[in-house]
Length: 124
Image (cartoon, rainbow, N blue to C red; front, side, top):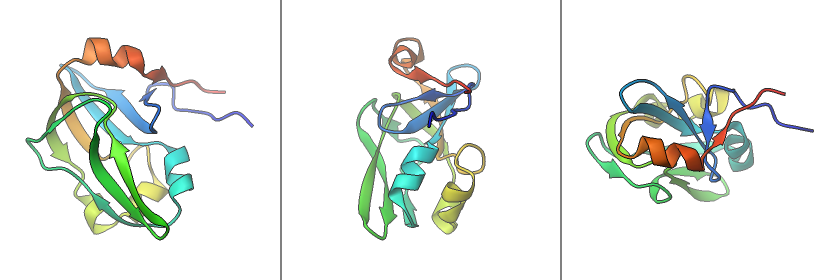
């Protein structure tokens, strides 16, 4: 069975998705595969607004019944906003990973080069 990925998104090998907005602003979340594999999510640990993230480095954790899973940054940049709804209700991540379940908004510092390392979404 082939997966169908929203075509407007880019995907990192460690299961984060990226939606490019404007002026190097991107929205980052976790893909459906990650969510399903994680199982029941108890808590989401997010970084703080103003923090810097670096491509391929851990920036947060998803705590599940079976253990803690580190979340790896698909791009580098400065965090402008985090989705505090996930801290209050981590189930949002499971219900709607591509819309309401976004994790953070970032001003990408090297978007042009780093986006080339990501997989472009496709619909099957």
